[in-house]
Image 1: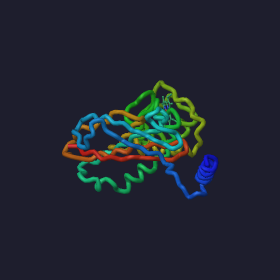
Image 2 (image 1 turned 90 degrees about the vertical axis):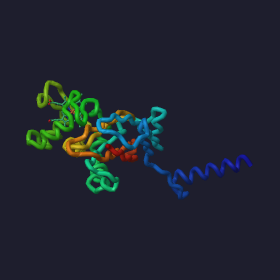
Image 3 (image 1 turned 60 degrees about the vertical axis):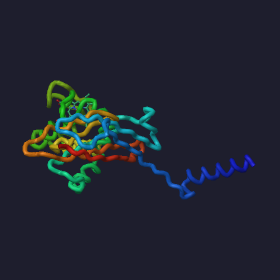
Image 4 (image 1 turned 45 degrees about the horizontal axis):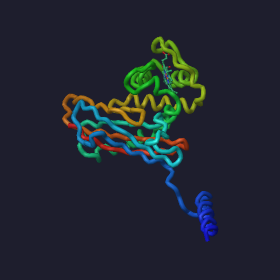
Length: 234
Ligand code: HEC
């Protein structure tokens, strides 16, 4: 009896793992964004503490330290004067958030230990890089070459080491991401499983607005999971 049960179990497992049993597993990671104070209305200038939990069928659970925090991002966009979340689900934003393969590649490397969206760490910020591109000082190929071959003397006294593991095409995707992120006025990206999101101070003539928060994780087998939340500012 015991033996035949085991036999059935073995057969059942074989069926699933070989994909013949018709059972399908959800492979994309599950991502859960939460705010420390659970409040979905915030004031101008507020600091909002957030955490991101990730469970991935291939990589594990962030609760047990099994998730690489370098592949976890909070992408943030602010929509001045929007009051209803239907105001912000427009196509442009969807495309921007879907088109983040450059960000995933950057998470695989150590880019974020020297670069950030708005603040210079040891390397220039994305905002600075994007404006050097838009004012014609650097072109895309310059930026691609710098990433792959390293760079010195363009921005200051620090040197960027070569990242020769990236192909030309991959470096181009990272450059596209840096330029689009750095030139987007009300967009921010924060790497890591937790952090503090700083709400801007009220811009002139703007009374209210919405923040769209998108937490995402890309697993080692390139599946992306995300969770979104809308915050109202007033
Ligand atoms: C050890 C720190 C460090 C790491 C890691 C690093 N960078 Fe840099 N990066 C710098 C510094 C410093 C500069 C400025 C170099 C200069 O003045 O020429 C720079 C410059 C750049 C520039 C502007 C280049 C130009 O030609 O104007 C881009 C784009 C860039 N980095 C992207 C990346 C990407 C993408 C990664 C990850 C694959 C990365 N960096 C990793 C430090 C770093």
